[in-house]
Figure 1 (cartoon, rainbow, N blue to C red):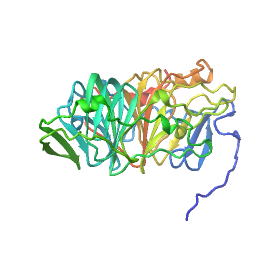
Figure 2 (cartoon, one colour):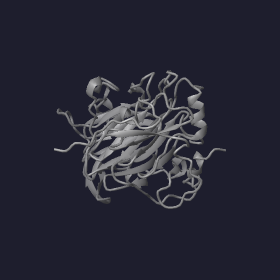
Figure 3 (spheres, rainbow, N blue to C red):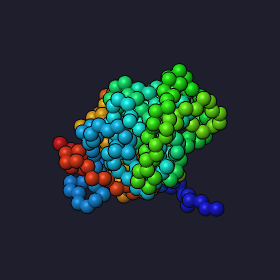
Figure 4 (cartoon, rainbow, N blue to C red):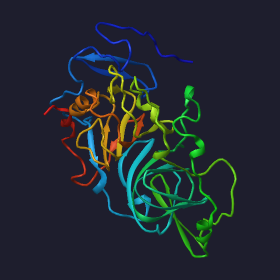
Length: 374
C-alpha cells in the first residue's frame, strides 16, 4: 500500500480555490501528477509560464497539419504513423471506396475516430453505419472492413498490447457524460447478410507491425448470430454530454472517454463557458509531469489556440508547462465568448512518444513561438 504525501498549504499571495479568483496580474500554473488525477498545486506567477523567447532541444511543443500527411489507401496498415511509444501508435488514414481485404490487429485494440466521411463498418459481429465524429472501438483480433460512401479521414489510436475500457465516473454515476446505453454494436442486419459470399477473401493480420496474409475460400464475415459482452462499439461525440461548471473550470480528465493502462483518451465537446466573474474560463497553464499530451482538432474554433484548423494536431511532451495562447487567454478572460464550439480528441500517454518521420511541410516548425505576444 502506498499514499501520496499530502499537505494542503497556502503560501504567500495565493487564491484558496484552484482556477478561481487569482491574485490580480498573475498567471496560474498547475503542477500535478497522474495527469490531473493525482495531487497538484497551483502556482501564481508574475509572468505567463509559456513566455519563452528561445527553444533548443527535442522537448519543444510541436504541431502537425495532417490534412496533407498521407495518400489514400485501402488498407489501415498503410496509414501514416504520427507518434508512437511502447503503449500506443497514433496513425492517420485516408481511405475511400471499399477495402479490398479484411483487417485484423493482433497487437492491441484499435480506436477509430472518423474525422470525415461516412459509410459502413463490417466485422465478425455484423454491420454498423458510420459518419463523421464517430468513434469505433475495435477489440484486438476482430476482423473488419469499411465501405465508404464518402472519402474518410480516420485517426487511429492503438492500445498496443492492451485494451480500452470506460473510465469510472465516481460520484456523478454511470450515466454521466454518456449513458452506456448510447453505445451502438454491430447488427446481423440485411446489409450484413447481403455481403455473405463464397468468393476468396484476403485478411491482412498485423502482429508486431509485420503483416501476415490469410486467404479464405469464402467471406469469413458470415456469422448468423452472436451473444456475449465483447464486440466493437460505436460512440459519436454528439452523444457526449460534457461535465461543466459555471463557477469552476473542470480539468481535462473530466472529459475522459476511453482509457487503457497507459493511455487516456478524452473528448472535448461544445459547452457553455464558465460565467462566474472569478472563474478561469479556459484551460489553465499546467505542467503534468507524468503524461505526454497529443490533441487532434476535429471541428470548430479552438478557444485556447490560435492558427489551429480542423485536421491539425498539437503535441506537448512531458517536462514543461503549457497552456493557452496569449490572444486566446485575453479573449477568454474578458468573457468575449459565451460558449465553445470546438470538438477535439486528446490522447495522454504515460510514456513519452516519439514523432514519426512525416513529409516535409506537415510540421509547423515555428509552433513553439505561437505563445509569444505579437
